[in-house]
Amino acid sequence: MNFLKYFILLLFIVNCNISRAQITNFRIHPSGVAQIEPSIARHPADPMIMFASAYTISGAFRSEGVYFTTDGGLNWFGSDTCNSGSSSNNHGGDPGPVIDKDGRFILTHQGGFITGMFSNISTNYGNVWSSNQLISSGDQDKGTPGNDDIPSSNYYGRTYLVWTRFVLPYPIVSSYTSDGGASWTSFNQINTTPSGYISTGADIKINHNGTVYVCWAGSLTSSPQNEKFCGFAKSTNGGVNWIATENAFNMNGVKTSSLLPWNIRINGYPHLDADRSGGSRNGWIYIVTGEKNMLPAGTDPDIIFHRSTDGGNTWSAGVRVNQDLIDNGKVQYFPAISVDNDGGINVIYYDNRNISSDSMDVYLSRSTDGGNSWRDYRINEKRFKPKTVSGSGGSGNQGDNIGSIYNNNKLWALWMDDHTGIYQIWAASIDLNTIGIRKIDSEAPDKFSLDQNFPNPFNPNTSITYQLMYNSDVSLKIYDLTGKEVMTLVNEKQNAGKYTVTFSGADLSSGFYLYRIKAGEFTIAKKMILIR
Image (cartoon, rainbow, N blue to C red; front, side, top):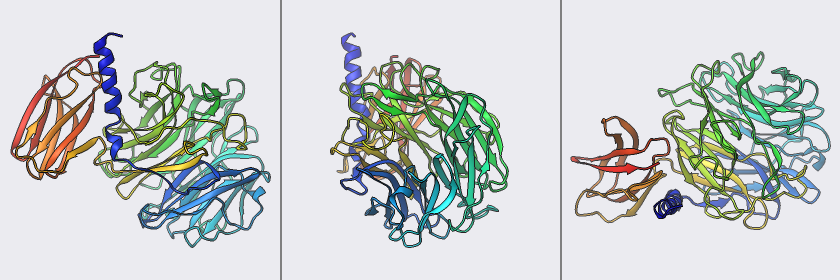
């Protein structure tokens, strides 16, 4: 590697961490109990109320942690066990938290040594829970709930659950409750899995019109048992009937029992969200997966994105979400996806791109153009070394997922992290309006200015610094030399001060580009060079 490339790489590493300085991490329930597989739900009518859960383990103890906030995430309360008065044998992980239209907390989970899918209800913000309600007996796996919180929907308030039934043909099945979890319907088979496969990792979302969407992975039953295609189904009559497509698109999932050098088990399960912003992409459906060895994924695990603009009838080609160099020996896995109120797509995942040791970071990739282009941000403050969670079931198990949700103008990211010596659920509350923009100085400068980007030339990231003499409506955009707009970096009102924003040219070809700022009556443009 010549000196210029080495210098640019060092600056790239620094720039990847610029936005992280304003993101604070915290444990939602510090304890001495291992917590893995976090999920989080919001109250449909009160953004101050959120409900999170995790699979909790301590020796022979198994349960589901129940954690809640009533002040928008400033304070969290709860317990590492769902205090339902039932035997711990009735609790087996894969927790699914949801809050229905009447404010009931509903927790779905496996049954542990007593097989089946169960639920519990709390009507007082998680302080007291009902006894276990049997949803379906028998061997089941990976239940995920979804709540119809659309007041105009014919099925408003209905809560759904989808999971894998371990009886041939190993399909995805569904059930729902219309009475706040007091009773559930008999399961309804969604698909008929092709021979030689098992349907795994079901996810569910309800669109803006009350249509229910479900996706899953078609995983091989023989070695290497990885995910080979993504299935998709939808119901327009409240989960009574389903239209299923067994292979919505091909994939090559990362499922393995020994990801090196950590010897941990990971999966490539698909995760789903839909645009309900009311904007130009309202109703679009997005799925992210963990894949490798099939383009656009490289030879190491990458996060891959697909979208449908026609209700799931057709799907786009894959797009590589993480913007590090392809085939660089680094890994990305466990994606979670959330679409915000402006139609931005936000994907969090584990990532070790900037680490020479065997530790791990947590990254956010964000797209504001429907998934065509992405920008990456590190969101964890401290790194951790992935390892097996003792007693969690199965060799190498670190847990199967992390979680995120958009609520009250912020993205909430939850992940499992053991840098304190035990796996705990860590969280970050991210203001998407300021991510990637770092205010350097709150003092009002004596003039407007735009600095030369640094580094220049760059590959693929560079920083642009500007200062505002007084509060202004600021627009900072990138153009190619033909005058075509490439990207909007800033489009908001900002207070007087000095700012730095990071620009990624990862999806652009080499050449000259212009960056132009307009702040009130101040306008100036400068040239920069991207070398790929």
